[in-house]
Length: 483
Image 1 (tube, rainbow, N blue to C red):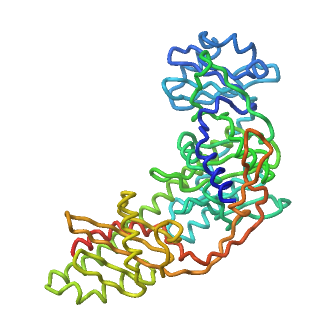
Image 2: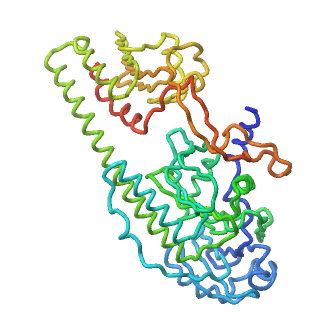
Image 3: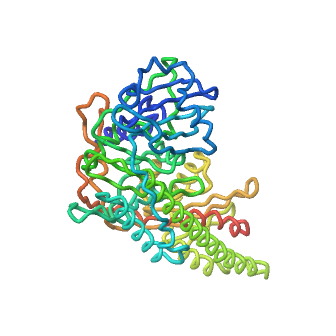
């Protein structure tokens, strides 16, 4: 089982999603270079619009496109009912690609409904965790209403990389709930998370159809489709959606400065393409929420920094008064035990080792420090110590938060916050360690088939460390310099 899970994760992370060389068949694609020469065309161009692949490749962009391309004064521009196709009018979406390329996407015309801004319905700022939860619930309720989706979820990424559904809205006839359920990090691999930084949303129009190849002038020249609305979907993810009973979906990213914080994801139980105006309407609401969230998290960090600085100043002034470090270790250690919500603390310098509460064995300390030096890490956090550091055999600690500080050569200071084992339950959307063998030759391992609630009893883990632990460790470096 472990080998299968490992193969599944490796398969997901190694998949070059932006270089798939294919699109979703809902629309067609033409790629032109900086001279407006066609370099790539999707094989279904004739079905959606006109001609054959050979009529476009290596030639100048069609005259109908030249005027539109001249109007592209931003990263992306949408034109409603701009072209006539054999099955009706077509919308045109122009997007700046990489290396000077332009992506021209043709899709069946949607209503392009213009909705009145709903920004005023939502809070302008967030003051508490309760207000944050209310905002998330209000947002998914509204999005489900305006999109008529089967289900809408607010899916937050945890420090471990796993995700948890914090808010959910669903149609009355939809069975089951994912609220408060967790999903393993491999469900949305890092390579897929990075692609969310290239576009406002990710739309999947029909999870039950096969992708269409994109043909280039040069046979081995695969276009970068990172910004393409129609970019094909990973076969693994298509299996995942089908196993969930989902036929179409749209996801909007909630972004931090350099990481993906959450997704707002909607599901339809039948193929569907939302009006572009609705997509933009929701995107505006998501952007406003994202701004309010980042402001709130910034204010939280500022308050935390101020709180820690006040404590550091207090202990620093006591040191300046001539009081020896060991004399007030009782006060420092008591504060550290409370600040890190842990069962023990260890402060280790070249000349001394101070402890309070549960301590660490010498072999465990050496193994931890060796692991951190090997990885080049100043901070290390784990709630499953023996799993995360293979060199540790027997120890009383189940979790640690460690800071290694070397302000000068041969003056290494290390701090360890220690937690004992804490039995608790984690509710998952299906058993996370059970990907299934697939009969599809192109997807040798597929996602689990069941997403029913599965409760894991964790007995060898410590309580999880919160998202502020790393900030506290790095801020603690100032105080460690005093020892």
